[in-house]
Structure formats: structure tokens, C-alpha cells
Length: 469
Image 1 (cartoon, one colour):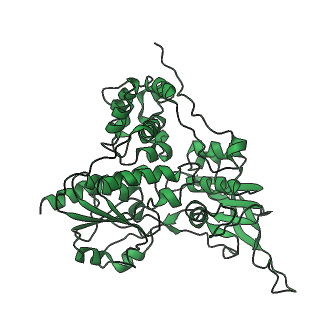
Image 2: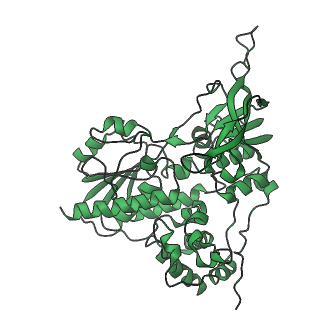
Image 3: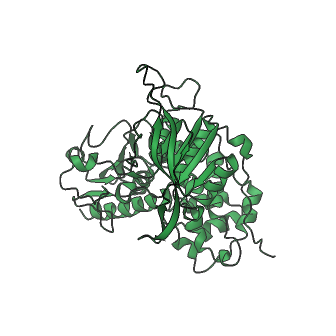
């Protein structure tokens, strides 16, 4: 039978409808389409797709199970390597990882590996009735700081080996960036909650509202009897541009904007945590977080949303699918533009005017691409005399985040690099004995799957370290 040269389309909500609701955009493959997509897999003997996966999922094997309609068997293969399959199937950049290595992709479109992983995980969550059984305890205790993808992965891998694992989460809900950073329309919170419940069934304890470095220190965790600590505290410290006007009312970091909407439910009609709704919104930046912020602003009722990015579409770092979805929903991309000042209202005759201090616009300058920088991307250069003003009410700065310095400042002997990332060796071991780290706390903001890979690496090293005791 001839191979279909194109991967099967993912069913989605219509752009005009989804741009005004928080329901999931992608609807998932039905079973018959999943089976047809699985049949496109060549089942290569050298399995190049597996080398492109940071957690080394046995991709041809789980796809073979889908071909034979053994969906639960496919799920069991995936979960040998991944603790968060329903999450990864939705938010991982498969196009630059496993799918980029797909042999079929040399001549045709690669197999929709991510879409198939999502299908399998969703099928299991809808049909499986039993949670996994808790393994027998091996007597060792491990603390995990942070319940994001690296922490949950490390906790899950250790729990499967019988470790008594406690995850400490600073916020009131487990999931880390998966719940505060990624919007409902890309990753429903019920999906994350289901994955967390699966880990709890394995014996993982989750303690929320515990800020390590404040409520407890890492040294106190060891004093409490934990034999190893994994730090997966993420990179939640927002970066700003340092331009005039960033302290005006209506200026947010993307981190705050998304946390207020995603975690604090500010999209409700009577929110406990308020957020600017409606009007004209400018999101500064071009990554996935910028796309999330722009598309969230639309759903909060914005009349107009701009993405302001200093390079061209070719350099835009966000996933192509997210960019296409944003364009379909009506986001206006102002490329080769860079803010130089945020403008605000000030009534010189009435210092009590309630409009004083609120954003009224953003002054930008047009850019052109010059010589490549150290990373090989052409450097954006301002065009003299090209300044203009963009009429906006809200500005969201989305130019990256850094690790929070709290753990470093309260943990003697823990070394960090110039960007605040914790320094680790190839096994995730820090400069402190028994303290491991991974994910964004080490690398700065990166992908969910790379953080999971770091969590798996550290779990193996912790197991080897404690098994040798």
C-alpha cells in the first residue's frame, strides 16, 4: 500500500470560535485516524527518532502497538520512559526533536509522533480504571524541590524504584510551569492533575505552599532525614528591558500575566486576582511564552493584540504551529520592531486623576538585520529616525526568565553560573554532595521535554548514589 506523503491533520476548533474561549484548541486524533497515521511509520531498524527524544521513548514500538489497535500496550511502552505522556504529546516541540529524525521525513512529512503520543495518553486516561500500584519501599528518602516537568519526572522514576519521595511545591497547585505558565487552551489543567495523581499512586507525596529557601532550607531537608535532594525549581524570575515606563500600571511580565490567568483564574467575571482585560495589548518577544501571552490576551477580551519582535519571522523562536495558530486567531505580528519606551498618562492639573500612571502607548523603533551574532542569528540593528508610537493599553514583556536566586542564597556551597543557573556535572550533581539539579533551574528557560530528560538523568544518578550506601 502506498504511503500517505502527509501526516493526518489535527482537528481543531475554528479560529474565530477558539480565540474567545479557553477550551483546548487541538481536539486530538480519533482512533481510526491514529491507526492510519501509525501505519505511515516505516519501523526503521536503526530507530533514528528515538535518538531525537530527550527521554528516549521507544517510538517505533509504541507506534506498532497503535497499528494493531493495542492502545493500552502503546501507553505502557511510553510510560517506561516518560512520566508525563499526555503533557508531552501536547507541548513538546516534536518537529525539532523526534520528528526531525524521522526517516519518512526525508522524502515526505514525518510521522506525527507527538499527535500519536497524545492520542495514546488520552485513550488511557479515558479508558483505564486502575492506577499503578505503589512499589515496595527500599527505605531511602529523597526530596524534590519543585513540581514542574523535571521534578515530577525525577520523582516518578525514583518512586518506581521504591524510594520514598516528597515533592515540595511553592505554589498552591502541583505542576509548576505546566499549570502557571501554559494556558488551558494548549494544556488543560485536568491533564496535569491526572498525571500528578498517577505519581501519587506510585507513592509520591506532594506538599504545596512550601518555599524551599524560605519555609525550609536544603540543609534542613537533610536534617529531616532526606538522603538526597533534587532541585527542579525552574526559572521564574522575569527579565525586563530596562526601558523608561516599565513601572507603569498595565505593564506585566509574561510570567505574571500568565500566572494570574492560568493559576489564579483571573479570566473569571469576578476574579480574586485581577488582570487588565480588553483594550489594545502589545506582547514584546517572539518565543512560545509570547505566543501564549498574546493568545491569552485575545481570550481575555482584547480588541487588538500585537506581537512586537525585533527580528523577522525566520528568526522567530516560537514553534511554527503556535505562530500559525496566533495568526489564524488574529494576532498582529509587528516584526523588525523594538520598544524603546512605554508611554503613560499623567494629568498635570490633577495628581488624583485615576488615569494617572496607566499605559497609553509604546514608542518603538524599526530594525534591520545586520551581521550574524555569536549564535549565528543576524543581529537586529536600529534604523535611525524610524521611531513610531503604537497605541496600546497593556504591555506584556516576554523576553525570557532566569532562575530565582533564593535557593542559591540560602544554600552554602551551591555554585551557580553568571546567569544564576545551578552548575551541575553530566549526572546532574551540583557542587554540594547529595544535591542534584536539572531543568530550567540549570539551563534557564527551555523545553518541557529537556527538563524531563534532566530529571531522568538525576534520578539515575541518585539511585546509583544511594544504592551504593
